[in-house]
Image (cartoon, rainbow, N blue to C red; front, side, top):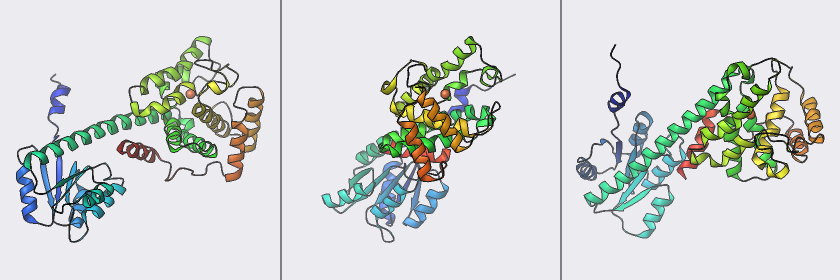
Length: 356
Ligand SMILES: [Fe+2]
């Protein structure tokens, strides 16, 4: 039987970048097209901002070249629109103008344009700028893909256990509520959000027979189960953008008194974000039904958590704070993160961070 080689299959995929030229003057568009025709780009043109927006809605565009001065909507306004829309914010924009002056350049860049060129345009310069912008765009695309795959993998791990549906989202919500109460910065809140999804990704290496065993685990099985913290860290380590999530993945099973795993860390040696996620994780496990227990009420769950804190297992300050946060909101499932708290939102947050 003949099987295609993956390399040749991928080579067959279209990888020609699409460049959209937005300019009301035919001559300007023609000039730009002439400059770019030496490279293998797919060129689209729009006379007006509205036509360009319609094109962006239906086509995958990799770069936009826009004139600073346009009749319907100015270049900077058009830029702002693209940069505030989730679907177009990562498309690089090259703004061109015949109007000299640093003021214009500042306005263009402030509106979100990624690069700025002044007419008369020099063909070589235009080509070099566009090539470099497209290279960055390709890098962002590949990062997006890698992170999307990782998050999809985390979801797949979660779905193996049908009893914990929506667990990641609730976890992210609870941890962020706690993080906000502690006054953490946006970077840490984002790490908590990602940690809600990724903390148990290492469970992919735990066999079903152990993960779903109803009885007590043997010592050997516990050994395997505990490895999920280290495996998770290994899986995510190559992604530099996930550096802040790494301590959560590795240390979310440590205990305040040093009896947790994998490193037996104690007290404040346990990274704060990992302690926060742990409190959220325990609350969620207690308040949802599992094969071995019913869903406990909010009050009962907090009682158990206080008891565990008293026993020395949990951060003695975080548990009462969690009780306080959930009491204040009246509804522990309050949406504390902007948006619906979906996986899509999480990915969007990451993309925005990457775009900065
Ligand atoms: Fe875990």
